[in-house]
Length: 294
Image (tube, rainbow, N blue to C red; front, side, top):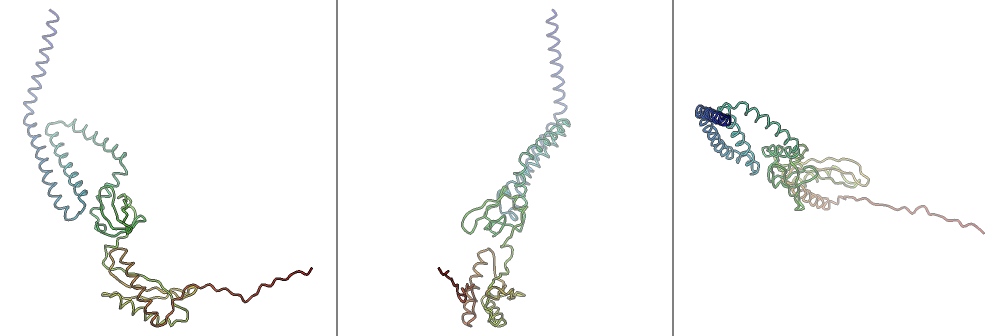
């Protein structure tokens, strides 16, 4: 008799609880449907906004990996906003607070564990929008020089003049200075040389300027500059500076090669000597050896 009473009481409690849940579901059904609709709506918004941003980024960013990651991050943010709004419509404030707190703790742990990786990732995003560094540019950075072949979320890849590839983390590029030859169309090239002490210095200066000006066309306010620098051990040294089209380091080498040939021909035609170090051995003092008489 007592056992039947306990069973009936338990069944009644279960039925009462199920009834309360059913009433709660019925009462919250409009909010539940609205929350689902809002969440689905944000998914579609994220999809179309992602396509729009991808089209805009194609005009500014050449790196597909950067575009894809940027679009994915933006879509994830939009979907998360929709998720939190849906939780708010369901009056799940406590759950929302717990989710935010858990996300903060997890985010902090992931950030500490992947500090170097995240630094390179954010640096990659910065580099993708940096006009001073683009694919195809010739750069010098971190002791390496070459053509930029790839910029991704972790590193940049440059191809050196010896046909070898160098992978440099993005954080190194952002933190260290780099020189980009491709950002300017014209660059000033400097060439050092020297002439003998018995040379006519004014004639040498005029001849060098005329030779370089005839070899390399100077534009606008550009001009060939010539300055004597020092009295060297065997020559009076000078530097000549001129402008030329430069987009990579090879262009400088080619221009210097052309300038050296032109100056050498001009000097030879006018018997101007380009001296080289000479070692002279003086035998004027004879070494005498006196033998001791026995």
